[in-house]
Amino acid sequence: MTSQARPVAVALLLAATVAGAQAPAPERKVYCWDEDGRRVCGDALPASAVNAARTEIDARSGLRTAEIARAPTPEERSAADAAAAQAQREAEARGALQRRELAMVESYATEADLRRAYGERIVLVDEAIKTSHLGIANLRTSLVSLLRQAAELELQDKPVGATLVAGIRAQRADLQRQAAVLEQQLGEQAALGGDLRAALARYRELKQPAAAVRD
Image (cartoon, rainbow, N blue to C red; front, side, top):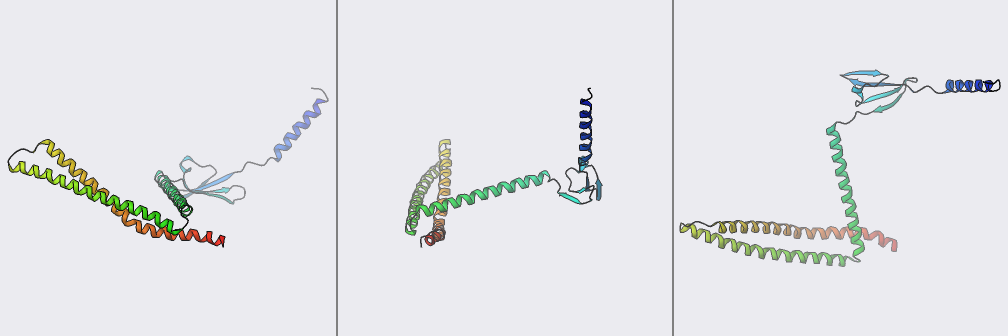
């Protein structure tokens, strides 16, 4: 090393030493947690306490710096996930309802238009109910006929054929399905009146701000 390079090297060494002396010491923490009914504190957190609720304290100042809650159990995580999913579904349902309500206001210029639309739905449901009643009557007549045939065979001590038995079962199943459809249609018919009243009330609420703006 030349005589000119030596002072430079010494200066760099001194600068590094001073910088190292001025660098802040790494932050030290003290951890406190409950273990087997007693309070335990230490400057290191053992693996057994990683998921436990704990307090973190600055070792230099003695001030509390953080409160860490315990980690949730698998059951709690599952319940939280389920609650979050339910909240998401409810939020999506509210959003869908708001979109339907806005579409209702935009689609119907007057209450009369809204009533007319519901009236068309009511007519469609009424017609579907009439069709279901007619279908049930026909199915019942056909089933009674098949049952009468089976009864006559039994009265004559003759075997009831597999084809007839299968026909009776199929006819009964069709009758039960049609009865279920009719029950659903009757429920829809009963709900339409309440739906119309609710839709009209909401329609008026949503229309009022728009009317106030125009005024």
